[in-house]
Image (cartoon, rainbow, N blue to C red; front, side, top):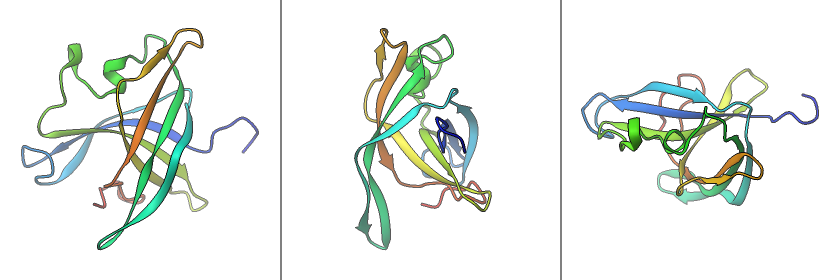
Length: 147
């Protein structure tokens, strides 16, 4: 990998639950949008494993910056909202997913949720926003949530 390349990809992911409400039934991906060019992801609090019975769960926050302010990305999209700012449907989830490629051809998938509204920096022509680490990462082989 050359200098200047980011060793991950960033995606917006929408899922739907088969039982008609969140966390009821099977979760399936219904839409994914890869953020291009790949934005900068910086840890602003330690992403650390916290002991949560019966296992561990990472906690922390990252800042995403250098998301283009072009017509391609707007506040509603970055927050997972529907047409004209509609809230996420009761049977759907929205999250950001950072994918870290591994040597075996798979990627570690880490799920994050927006901490608040994105900041529009017009001097640098970019969006910036903070994301909280969320559980229920998808399995790197099957894409099925592990939580």
